[in-house]
Image (cartoon, rainbow, N blue to C red; front, side, top):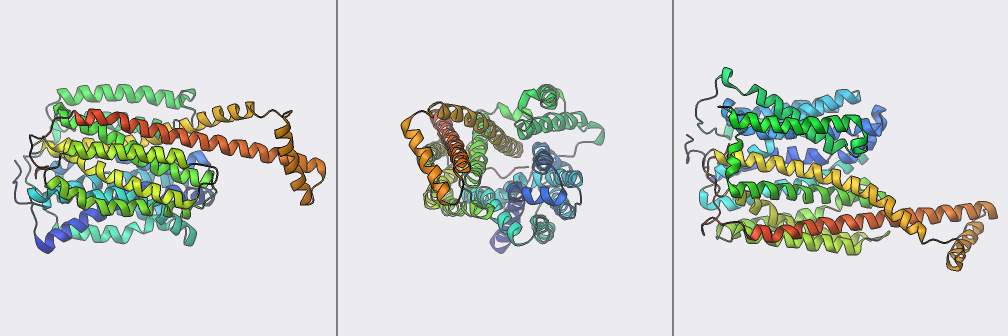
Length: 526
């Protein structure tokens, strides 16, 4: 068993441990979004296609999602401090190699290895921070960790945009190196390892479970990341990997439920609160990463903003989240039920989505997004910590670490699923809205004819001949229709994301509480 009280820190040592864990969590999270704004520069520099450069994002996500469920087991095998330090070093070394890559597939391979190192940082950071605080301060510990997790995705786009505009794309990887070196040294000096039960003998290690997990989750992540690019089941590789992921998940579950020393303890999902918490973590990932994905896409593709301007837009949301996190932590410490906070966050996120649905136009001003994203920050702060504590609140001992791994994996998969669904839906709805709008444009209609005539005369005033001016007028009208169809598609996405969150509210309120006790994250995570 784990010594329960040996991991609690006090004074300056606790501050150092907290800073170390937050640094590592930010390294992992920022790297999931910082690359997005640099893909165009990478594509030009490495001479690749758009499909090939997309692998830079996909490879990292696949590495992440494979390693996260195994973090609890790996920490037991090697000791948490050693495993955590090794993960930081792997992440840092491959960050350097990513920056020095000279070919696309070399970069993709390094990104996959970087993802394997980074996957452990997020969940293990949560464990380290939680166990460094006494039980009565666990709500605040989760608030501190939550600030890093939710602010991280909002830091990536503006930071990446600034680096790409003022330096070059390799520096989005190089900035990890000094932080990684400092974090490694601090980890080796200050992080403690709990005393786990005896390690699994090499002959008893669940190698088949590891292989099945990598195949199942890796295939699923690829399908979610690349499904839209391959037109889903019209692509042979997407169809094959979908079948592989289904069978892989089936045999993985069978293996883990029947093997003596499973790599992932699926039996912990018998806990009702954890099952609900993993579902809510999936929905949180869908909303967090989905909204982080959709707004930069809208502002750049429809409003014509730069990558840096689109990234800077998320700073208000980060400020709101940072402001609210300690307040949420205090409310949890004082015994406010997690269900009420989660329900409140879901309602706020529904109102945020409805607000976004109302303000989207072909020329929405930046001020409108500023207040919208501030509101989003408030909602997310009410979701992350309460969902985590709710999921883990009725678990004990080592099961807490195993539960934390599930919630972390589901949040990652929820984000991937959200981006895949949103991308596909926008493409389909855009065509549908375009056809609908064109059907209402009757060229024999006097109003339409007057509008075209006015645009033609405007182009003629700029020196064009009548025939070229008329052609330009029709092109401008077509562009206007395309832009309006795109706006309507984004409006639909906002509305349906909001409805998804609203539907969850009654189910959250039906979850059993923790018998009136304050939120307590036990001190024995992985």
